Image 1 (tube, rainbow, N blue to C red):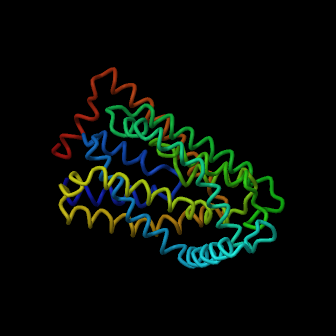
Image 2 (cartoon, rainbow, N blue to C red):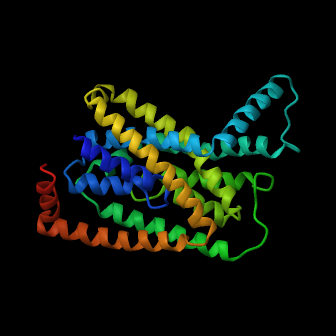
Image 3 (tube, one colour):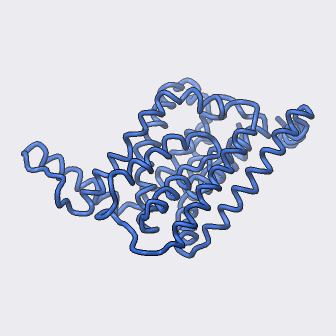
Length: 297
């Protein structure tokens, strides 16, 4: 893998990890058309998450720090017998809700092989349908926003709201299903405040992405060391910079009612990917062959 390819994939990862359009779906398309749809290519895609993880820590550092302090205080109360679920301050309640939201992620352990096979296969039709599913969720979220009324924050959010967001996050590893888009959409459908839904979604992703990145890194350490250090560093730094840009852009789009543009984008992209994927099957992958020649693959 060249530094140029690392830059391209870092840009794709950074922008699409937080914009609700599926980073894994876009990277899967890039790797398919350039002939990189292998376990090796998927591993690099996972490692790029280090950059976007750093972007989340930087963008939400104040809230994350408060939650860390509140978690410590909560553990102290548990060990001293003072802990209670009643009348918790908002940030402590947010910690508990985050824990509840992580419970459905246990399913991912049993589905990892399926997710890996989709990402590493020589097919993009599934990705196309997944993009359309993301679009469907975004359109439902837009309808929920238009209903108006008082919106929930940490004090009013229920445990079922957290479980619903966690459940959709559990299927988000399928390329084409946006993790941020699906979890924010479900949060908005459950009546969460728009700003709070974004914050809760991104912070909720941290334990999951950290765990997945560590698991793949340890499991594939020999392959990780095969990457040129310059390629890894460049890819991660690019994904960090563009991740910060994407977080700011997403906040602007959601708060200014321009979410619909992303919903239409994923719908059109999904239809196009399904059509192209079927054509590739019938015609013997001529588009992939042309792109591979362009990239010298």
